[in-house]
Image 1 (cartoon, rainbow, N blue to C red):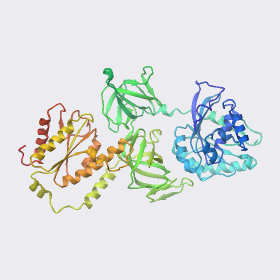
Image 2: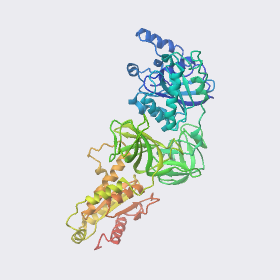
Image 3: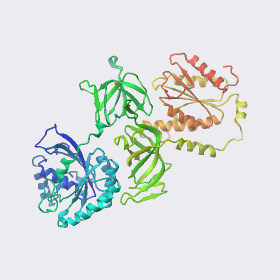
Image 4: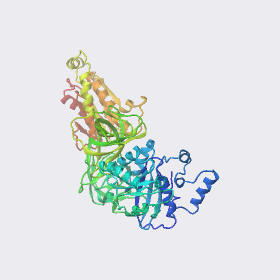
Length: 613
C-alpha cells in the first residue's frame, strides 16, 4: 500500500520542520488503522474531499464507515479486514513532520511489522480495552525491544466499550508495565483512548475526567528526536564497485548507502573483514554538485587514493573511530517466523548490511516464549514465532557491530526459500577455533574408507606425488587458465597422472538452486575442495584456475583438501594481503617460461621426482 502522495498534509508543507518516524503496532483488530485514520482526519491532514469520498463509497456499498478505510485502501486488505502490509502516511504538527508507519498486527505478518518498524524512532503499542493484552501484544512488545526502540507509548483503545472505566485502564497498565519491564522497556506513557470516537486523540475529552495527561498528538510532539545515526561511528556497507573506462575515465567508484555517521574527503578508511586500508579521494554523487562530505542515509559513492580490491558486502569504516567486528560466529537474539523450524545442519541465507552469505545454526542457548517470557533450555531447534538466544556461524567472515554499540549495523534477517524467515540482533562476537567446516572435515576423515593401496605405492607406480595446484588471478585475465592448461599438457606428455578442471563445470547442469553470485562462489569453493580431496588421494596432480578468490577462499580449499597439500600460484597483481602464495608469476611473461617455473616448484615440493621436463 502506498499513501506517500495522497496523505501529505495539505495545510502545512513546511519542509524546514524536523522529521520523525513513528510505528504503530498492536494485535489484529485492536484499532491501529482506525487510530491513524482518525488522527489524519482530526488534524485536517487528508487531501480535500478524501474523507467524504470514502464515506460515500461506504454508503453506496451499504457498509458502515470506518476510519481505517482511509488507510486500508487495497481491495484484498478491505476484504479481509486486516492490514497485511506496512502503510506509511505523512502529516505535520506545529512542531515537526511525521511519517506514521501502520504495521500489521496479525501473527502471520510479523515479518512485515519488523520491516516497517526497523527505522522507527518511537512506537505506539495499541491494546484493546475489551480484549485486553493478547499474545501478539506481547510479541510486539518484544519486537519493539529487539529493534532498540526506547520511546514507547501504550494506547489503551476502545475505552468506550468499557464505559471509560478507569480501573480497566489501570489494570492493563499495571500488567503490561510489568511485562515490558522484564524486557528492559520502560513506557513513556499510557493513554486511554477511543480512536473511533476521537477521544484523547488530538484533544482531551470530558468522558474520562480522571485522565489529565497528554493526547496522542501531544505525546507525538513530546517524543525526543533521536539523531543516533549521525552520532555513531561511520559505517558504509559496500553494495558494488563500478569501473569507468570511456574518454580516459579510470575511476573505480565504491557505491552504497551511508548507514551511520559522516565522512569527509581525505579521511582514512578501512574495509572489514578484509582489513584493506585507503583514503577517500572524492565523493561521487549522480547529477549533483561536488561534495566534500557524506552523511547517514545518503546513497553515494567514493573513489580512493590507493586502490584496494574488496568485494561487495564489506563494511567501510573510518580508521579514527571505533571499529566494527568481523568474524564467522556471533551470539544473537533471533525471532523465527519461518513456517518450518530453524534447525542445525541446514544452510540459510543471512542478509547483514550489504552482505549476503550462508549461515548455520550452531547452538541454541535457550528458547524464549515471547508471550510469557518463559525460557526452555536444551532445545536445539527454533520453532515458528519463538525467540532464541543462539550461536550462528557464517561460511565466510562478515562485518557487523554489537547492537549495543550500533543498532543499525547489528541487525540482520535470514532468508529461507526466498522468504524472510528470521530476524535478530547481534549480542556478541564469538572467538573460536572451531567451525562447522572443521567439524565436517574431521568427521569426513574419521569416516573415510581408505584404499588398500598406500600413497607410497601410488608414488612408486606413477613416478610422482599428488598435489592440488590452484592458479589465481583477475577475472578478466585469461593468462592463468592458459598457464594451467599448458601445465597439464606438459605433465601429461611426460606420462604424469594429471587433470585440469574448469571450475564452472562444477555448477553447470547439476540443478543447484542458487540465487546470487555469493552462493555460486561458496558452492564453487565447497565442491572444488571436496573434489580435490578425492583426486589428490588418488595420486593425481589436480590443476584448476579460479578468479578473484580471497584468502578465506584459499584457506577453505586448504581445509577441504586435507590431509593433502595445496599449491597456490598467483598470476598478475597479488591481491592477497594476508596470505602467502606459493608462487607469483608476472602475467606479461611468456607462457612457456611460466610453466617451467611451476615445474621447478613441483620438483622443489618433491611432487615431480625425476625432473626431466
